Image (cartoon, rainbow over the protein chains, first blue to last red):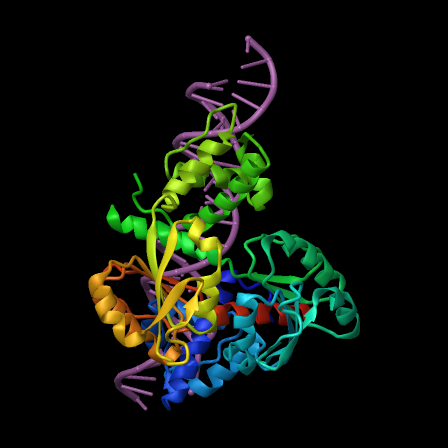
Length: 209
Length: 209
DNA sequence: TAGATTGTTAATCGATTAACAATC
DNA sequence: TAGATTGTTAATCGATTAACAATC
């Protein structure tokens, strides 16, 4: 399956996932595309199209079984797996990410943190020790890392990325405002906070018009 | 102008902005849509279409003046203005946002922080004092707030939002995984970190196929 | 069975890309 | 002027929505 599913569809999957977890918590057993679309503020048609990208898992005349649908989406998103993660740049954002509880549920296991700043190196954040950045290449040599959370200074972002790529990291969750250059099939997921704030500014200004 | 510009276009503006700041820093004086598209990995056609949503500011045969184009995009994004901001939920993420230097440049001025936790209330983060959450309604009564950065627990997100709306906050930058219900024309900008991580998981899994 | 709701095809809508006359 | 590159219209592509036969 999975010929080439559009980014728009993938971007909606986590929302389906969240909604289904909610429904399951509430003890709801079945749900129709129409009900889902009401929650999502989209159309029943889109919901069905989305699911049918992966081979529909509903039943005519019935709808979708919440447990089963949730399992499927979990599987599609790969949330059954366990990911080994590291944090590069253990300042404010890096530490916030280390402390954030939500990630471990999805199977994202923080294994190590790194920083340049001698004041930060050696700290323990949420039971994970901050190592000196100079140790990163050796660490990558010795340990298989799935995802690196990149929260370093803008100036160092690309250089650190190159080290991570050389070390065989499979994905980079990028919190810097830099559009990283990568080779090969390394996955980059950007969280451009500044962009998000600027977009908000645009719409706020719109209010005044 | 500005009839109804698509979200896709708006989402690209911060990237143009970043690129133009870079070019200006490098002393570049002019740039063509073709050059910009090469940096953006898009097409020259799209670049020109994007700018022409706001009334083109190029010159035939020449291209775009970097300084002028940057000014225009800055103006469109409303980055000349000054925004009064507060942080609700001053845990890890709230504090990281308070400490983040990048925001003040864009005119986002942090005025106050709030939290429920007595261990956090009273702290000073980046020279801003954390107030008790119970003081929020009075604060909003007394002060005009443009943007609230929402970094509270998932469980409290909607309730806090209701307080913010009642207090006349114009926009909410939402770091909770909740899809907030809002009335009126309050602007919501979501930073769904978990969604972003799940999307990354999807593409990582794809590698293995 | 009859009603409900899916899976799926067809129609529409919007966004991206191509083309080219206008003009600096 | 000739070359370059815009602004803008037209063509294409892709995503969303509508419609409906299949079927639980």
